[in-house]
Amino acid sequence: MSEMSFEQMLEESLKTIHNGEVVEGTVIDVKEDEIVLNIGYKADGIISRNEYTNDSNADLRELVHVGDTMEAKVLKVNDGDGQVALTYKKLAAEKGNKRLEEAFNNQEVLRAPVTQVLSGGLSVVVDEARVFIPASLVSDTYEKNLEKFAGQEIEFVITEFNPRRRRIIGDRKQLLVAQKAEQQRELFERIHVGDVLEGVVKNITDFGAFVDLGGADGLLHISEMSWGRVENPKKVFNVGDKLRVLLKGINGNKIALSLKFEDENPWLTAAEKYAVGNIVEGRVARMTDFGAFVELEPGVDALLHVSQISHEHVDKPSDVLQVGQEIEAKVVDFNGEDKKISLSMKALQQPAANVDEMPEEVSEEAAAEEAPAEEMTE
Image 1 (tube, rainbow, N blue to C red):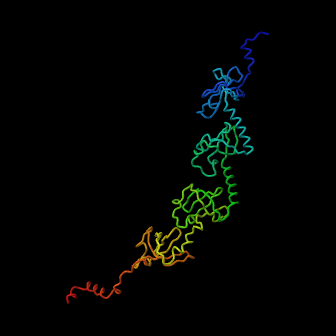
Image 2: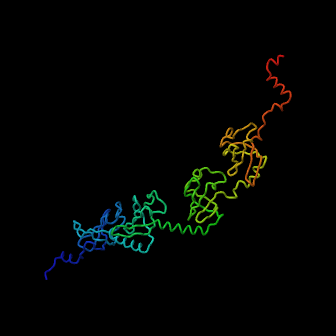
């Protein structure tokens, strides 16, 4: 048997490898964009940054260190420079696909960071395997701006798994729907009419505001926002406001709320404040042809009849008063049971002088002033 050279014996002792084979090696050098592995072959293995991670800005020196042991898959036995081209990313993705297949079969809830925001949804990565979550499955409500999810860790389930077509679909919406259904069930089990609850304003309309109670939304109707009148809810509340609300009613899954707490009812002390004969101040809130309604305080309005505005004849209140005007008047009637109060401005005014009621000498003097000159000379 012929003698072999040292190089031939060394080459014979080294293993042979093939494209697609998984090899294990030890990191012997790391650069910013390249990893060098000793894989027990005549040539070292090279993993470029693009074959290690999807992050094109990653510094491999921060992720891998000399002496680390890792597995990789052979891309090319000879990359043209006499070295072995390896991929860590594709091997990790294959393992990730197996992980996703198991999660798909078991309907397991996964958690992963959002790596990319696309026009049609979100992209997340599980063990280097990509999952696409369509915009319609991101939330149980319409999300106008998906950018807010960038970098966030989110939970989802795999609803479609077809790696051959590169179609792996995730669904976050069904988890939120299930979670809210459970929260709603728990909420309805513990709440009762008359309870005082904490909530957050979620949406505001012309007729009221919807308040998130933590499991279900309640409607705070415009008529229940204050003991006084509210013209526009959007001028009173903002989305995100925290409120302490009274649970007024439950009808199926509908909840009616109120901010009109009975211990704050202004009519509880109205009898004393607005007793007949009291002089009060108020603001003209609205007017009709027969009179003006004056707000004495939020929730307490009084009627100033057109006949009680002045001793002089007034056709309609708007001829002498304006909405928003502050006035002073006397309480002439109080009906606590029907919550009605009547006012009079006329009662605070001096009546106009009447000639028939003047003293005789004053009347004669006035008559003399008004008599024709020829009468006075006779």
